[in-house]
Amino acid sequence: MTGLAVAVAHRQGAFRLDAAFAAEGGVTALFGRSGSGKTTLVNVIGGLVRPDRGSVVLDGERLVDTAAGRFVPPHRRRIGYVFQESRLFPHLSVRGNLLFGRRLARAEDGIGFAEVVDLLGIGHLLARRPNGLSGGERQRVAIGRALLARPRLLLMDEPLAALDEARKAEILPFLERLRDLGRVPIVYVSHALPEVTRLADRIVVLEEGRVAAAGSVDAVTARLDVASLRGAREAGAVLAARVEAHDPAYALTRLASPAGPLHVPLVDRPVGAAVRILVSARDVTLSLARPAGTSALNVLAGTVAEIGALVPTDPTAELRLACGSAHLVVRLTRRSLADMGLRPGLPVFASVKSVALLD
Amino acid sequence: MTDAVTGWLTPEEWQALRLSLLVAATGTLASLPLGLGVAYLLARGRFRGKTLLDMVVHLPLVLPPVVTGYLLLLAFGRRGPVGSLLAEVGIVFAFRWTGAALACAVMGFPLLVRAIRLSIEAVDARLEQAAATLGANPLQVFGLVTLPLILPGILAGTVLCFAKAMGEFGATITFVSNIPGETQTLPSAIYTLTQVPGGEAGALRLTLISVLVSMAALVLSELLARGVARRLAA
Image 1: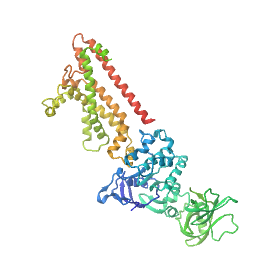
Image 2: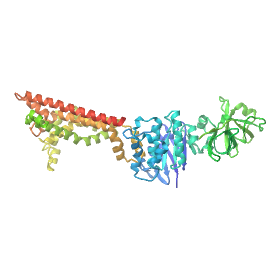
Image 3: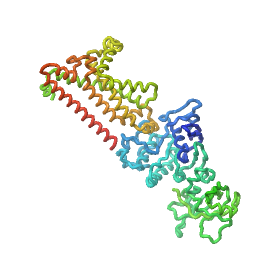
Image 4: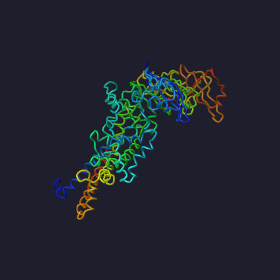
């Protein structure tokens, strides 16, 4: 039995954590505002916090089972942990840091030193001391150090939060490469939705110590009832699409998405390549009849699936639209909502002004 | 070098210097493992009686040295509860150079523990957590992370303890007396020389030696500490 299953209750001062979720391979994001219990939850998984009640099971092994009085200490869990502040050992060189866990594991199998150094692009840093590294470099070394200890699971607690935008942009491609290698399942903690939608396969939304929503990124980001997503949602729905055809004459690429065909400016990817796209809620306009003589290239037919909460002080509202086999999120004014008589089940047409490529 | 020094010092003075170095080095090295353990307990331990342990460790710092020496004599003397037990297995402290080393160890202990304790408290416990997630058991965490990080503190404590031992007088003379060749260390020898007519020259020579040894210890510790700091920072 592979995968992680967590069901724990823990009290820390006035804060109560009471959460359960399961994760298999790939990247599972723990998403929530600061103080929602994300870090406590990964600390429970990593063995740095002993929960009051509950269990943690990894690949069939019970790491924590308070009912049976079982608690496996962190050094016997083989769970890698990348901390927000990298926590490199100042008395060791980059090479010494990278090999710290590998030497203790005393094993030759698993991902190799050269492979990790190459994956993270840290070959030129090996002889340096951690204090001389930039924030982005430190974090890459920390990721390599955790990987080389041959973990069965990798925990990453906001690994980009302490970095500025430029450094984040520098690291994200490495994280994507790590994800695409698929060698080790990852639990990725973040309060930044763009990061999560770009990296994760599944998302677990935490609110005040409880799981508010869990599921695939596409399904969860399209939900309107998750309050913490509402504030964080710059965007709308994330869709897994495929390059269908290029039209160099007009400099356009046609994508096949579960919501229907979409045209985007020419993409430098081969036909058949998988891409993740984001359809921003503000970039979708609705009409009751198929628009005629419109400049919009992307018009999709759909049905109103759900209307989000209406707030008197907010002139806009969110609406979820069922399009093909996917959902789009649309942000429109409450006035339009009323004027058009929109209600669940009503067929409408969505004009999509722009589509953002996530990777 | 040796000939020059022995030629300059009288055989008795030379003996006092060698004895002082032996006693101070032995006392310091002997108290180091225990000092490390006690410092770790005081820095990280959570147990009842921690305050009491802290007080007992610091006692030699505040007690008159003569009192400490007399307490040692009561406990470790030939008829003392500890001394008589140890005498049966052939370990004798009373009126031996080993007793002088014990007195030095006890008197330097608080300085040693204090320096090491402060450096342990300065270690970022989050680094130790990180080491655990990389598969290090508690002993490996201590040996591979904590110990290298507190090395400057250990060095500082050791040098302080050694310097204190080199100058220790009150407890030593009370506990093991002032026997030339056995327990007469530099301070005792200087004291003796100042008590006899015509001893001023010898006292001055030994005073100079004392100053040189203490300064050499300080310079050595400074160099070592700088080396460690460079290793940690570079």
